[in-house]
Length: 258
Ligand SMILES: [Zn+2]
Image 1: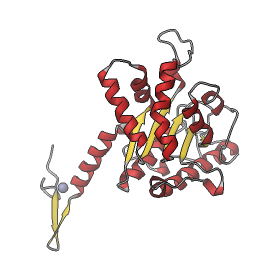
Image 2 (image 1 turned 90 degrees about the vertical axis):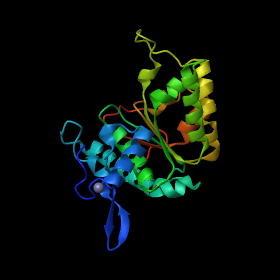
Image 3 (image 1 turned 45 degrees about the vertical axis):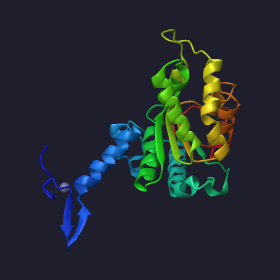
Image 4 (image 1 turned 45 degrees about the horizontal axis):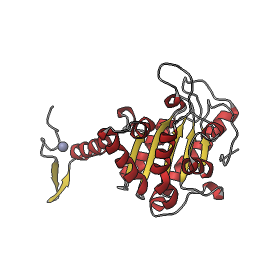
């Protein structure tokens, strides 16, 4: 690696007799934090302005309805980001005086920009030096579905600690693909053991009402319908939900802007 031309690799610069961190050190520190969080590399520099509200993922002009939905989604995420410091302090979130909950569920299919928005929220917390945790739903499922596996148990304990704390927790890609039986292609219900472990994981979060962001490719009726235990079900029921275009229509509850 070539040395930074500004500090010659010292990682600090002296300006007017004062020492300050060089930009190269700041970006190195940021990279380490994001790597530890597990944010996908391609979203390390995600910005809300990357969420294009005029076109879809392939660059086509959106219908008026989709454009409106995207505009609402971006406004809700912007408002949520502004509120993060208060949310980690125990307040709840209500968009324009609507439904009040610290949980935000973003519903969107592949290419709907849900990971981009989840990354923007996560990065906003990191930049404000607030406690943030980011998980993929695959990790949550791994932690709940493997029994007698020390690595899975360690992961379960780590996710549990995050959810029991007051920190911002972002869980990306709660996708239906994790419910298919291996190789069969048939959708099968989550086992009782997994449903119980999920409730165990989320019970602290349900009680302390700290900020939680979940992205999913499923609609509210798919998330309900007795799939999860009472704790997780009520988290989804009470959550603020926003729909990101390309989603099919479902039975909606508390969807802002509809
Ligand atoms: Zn430097």
